[in-house]
Amino acid sequence: MVSYSSGCRQRSAQNSLKYQRFTKEIIVIEIALNRVANAAGTAYSRWLEDVLARTAGPTASSYAQGIQALIKGDFRVDDAVSLAA
Image (cartoon, rainbow, N blue to C red):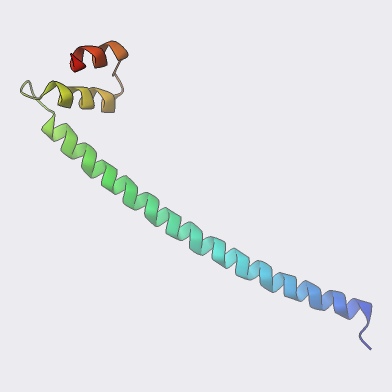
């Protein structure tokens, strides 16, 4: 006959193993998400450098100047209207 306390210990040990597996899975997911975030950040940085290089200077199109203003954060609605005209 199994006593109540030994059953509790067994369930506790099973729960502990489940928790350990769950924790390991969370860590694996966290590492994968960090890799995706780093790759996205790198890709965005490269894209931003490319856009800024192509939109520099007075010969850049109004569209390119608008993109550069948007990236810098000084883009306003009246700028968008004048660039679209």
